[in-house]
Amino acid sequence: MTLTDFYNEVSRKTDTDKTQINVADTKRVLAIAFQILAGYDAATAADMFAKGLATAAKKNSKATT
Image (cartoon, rainbow, N blue to C red; front, side, top):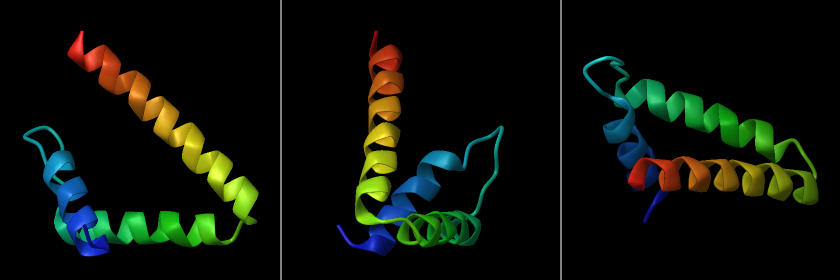
């Protein structure tokens, strides 16, 4: 998967009937998020990323039950 593929996948999932977010907006927000993460040392960025993944995993498990 390329970074563009990732941006497009996120955009497809965030653009709903209730929340209309286009691909350009999604790419901009994700690019800013990556810029912010790049400003931290590797350990801090990895910790924040791991916490985000853990939160997503909890939400995914709630959605499937």
